[in-house]
Length: 61
Image 1: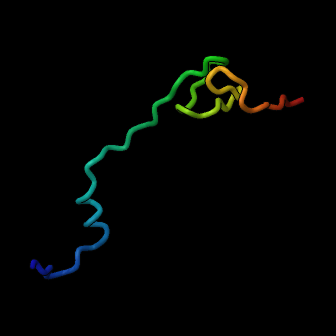
Image 2: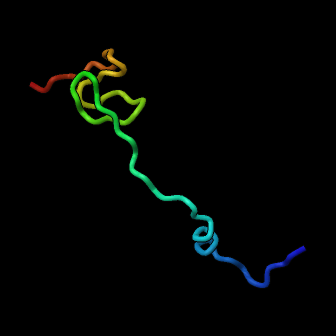
Image 3: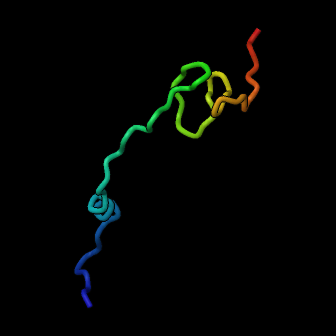
């Protein structure tokens, strides 16, 4: 069985294991107000999700 001669640091080990590229999340357009939102999330602007009101948004006075 192989036996390492010296310790591999966490930073060196992690650098070797990175085989991915960080990508920006995909955004969708809200069907109610047209704001950009993350998929499968309630719209932060109007509170709608899949065409229905999910969260009642309070209007500032």
